[in-house]
Length: 331
Image 1 (cartoon, rainbow, N blue to C red):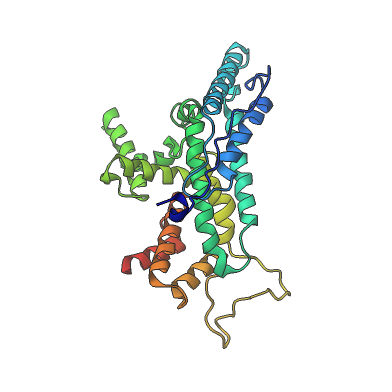
Image 2 (image 1 turned 60 degrees about the vertical axis):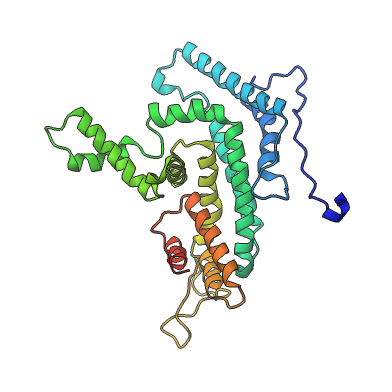
């Protein structure tokens, strides 16, 4: 059969070429490095694509150039700090400024995505699912692109500086309650590992294998506070939760004395009992109860939404996650 008979495949987005920097050194300063990185991030995270589950790629020379630029910038920063007369506790970890810019980038991106959300609750889930899939694919690709930052800055911050998703301070209370005077160092270390395991079990079946364990930890990292140092992909998912999901989960506050648009009736009146007040909760209620949605499609959307909430770190005991979990358990 001819290609015309088979139908044309969607045009693929070309690789983003390595931008010309002339004689300029991308790693000479934070501003020059960021100017070099931004086109790659924009292409990976924001470019339109026919496949929302796969991020567009960049040219291999650009890919290696980003790695080299990050390496050179952080290395030169480390050397400058080491040569400084400042005390070690007064000097930030090398790479902190770059990591903060990346965090801001994902935060700004998520706020842009939220601004594009439809005003009609019935269209909200149709927007969220492909929107998140595309964003998450970009986050995973950016995570690979910026792997040097993960290996140098994130690993050091999480382990050496104890600023990861779960710190000693987080589990100190647990250990203090169960510790005995006679406990050896090995026994205390075991209790620390047990607490970490207990936390990870909240996010998945960690006994299912290495992939399941890594997936659970990624969710736990995304659930952490903004003061915690986590891998780039978890950083991006955490920002999606904070800047996109949480505003949709929030219950709007109305000023006294003013009638709110689409106000939910008071249960003490003659009207029906009040329903969910957050936009996303209302959209989920409509999805699960609507007679206009085929059951297979309803199940698919509920599953995709549940995966998204888990992936961005919405905790398992959140009412919306419990509601979706209950629906999935009976379907």
